[in-house]
Length: 99
Image (cartoon, rainbow, N blue to C red; front, side, top):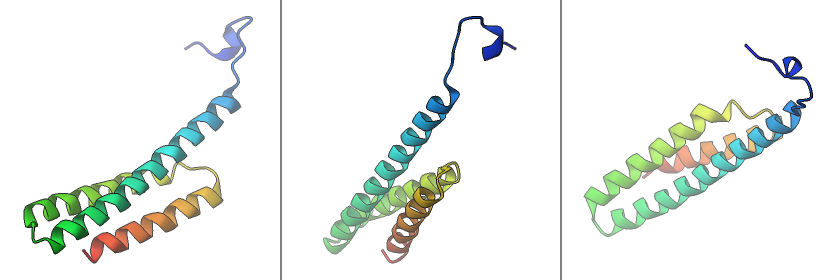
């Protein structure tokens, strides 16, 4: 298996790649949470309108979003960022549970 050392003249900045990966992961998780909160709002609105079919689908979607965030939040290396994401995740899960 080739390594960075086996390629003469090739310099790979693994730390920069890791940092970029963490930024991308964090952006993904934050976008997913934002989407989850929007879907919860949507579910609340359609529930109030008596549209049970849309409500069930919106609640399912919000739950899937929370599960996705839960699956990947453990990959965040920065403890403060991880805690902030987990806090928002707990809030999303709480809102989904009271729908």
